[in-house]
Length: 149
Image (cartoon, rainbow, N blue to C red; front, side):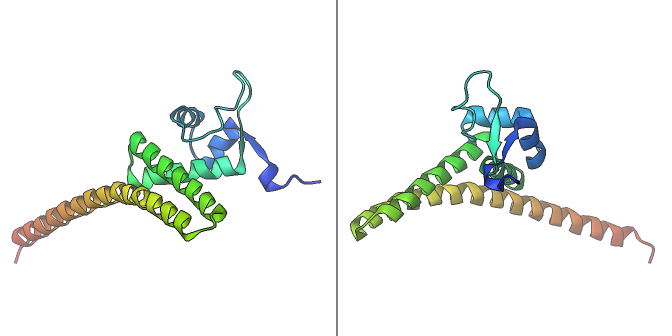
């Protein structure tokens, strides 16, 4: 009999290997509140992670690496995403347009802040690309100036 993927639990080393990170990173992310697995665990008990925990860890690492986020920014993005998830649950339970309007009003600043963080990173990447493009143009001009005619 096979165990369904959703019911599978991974030890910390297995979770780290699956996510392409270290056990130290996982422990640190738990400390920061990025992964909730550590808080419900008895002191000294073995850390066990679900498929959902591993997926969340992979997403956090992808965001960190792709966007070059600081840990504080990563925490901020993750907290905003968790708040948005809670609002999505409220939306499903809401019955009136007034309740849904309040949910939308609460979600807008969360998404705006996430977008601010990402836009700031994009601006830095664009500026870096512009600098490299200028360096490349100067080098190509230098090559033309130095090449025998």
